Length: 65
Image 1 (spheres, rainbow, N blue to C red):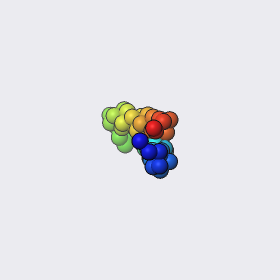
Image 2 (cartoon, rainbow, N blue to C red; image 1 turned 135 degrees about the horizontal axis):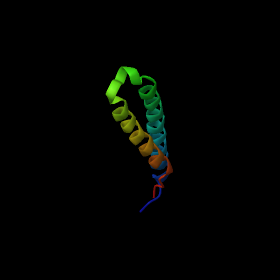
Image 3 (cartoon, helix red, strand yellow; image 1 turned 90 degrees about the vertical axis):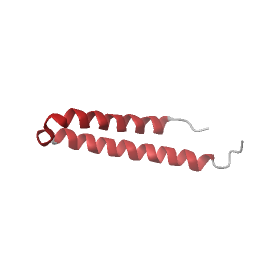
């Protein structure tokens, strides 16, 4: 296979991973700081945001071939 389009796909993957990581961190911060307003759903939203953070880290560290 050709390696011509490798840089663009790799850059897009890392950029999308960075966006997921940033959104996950900001959303986790707001979920934790507004725990009183969320009530019993704080743990649920915290768990969902941790999943976003983990996906962002995986996309940023994955190697594209």
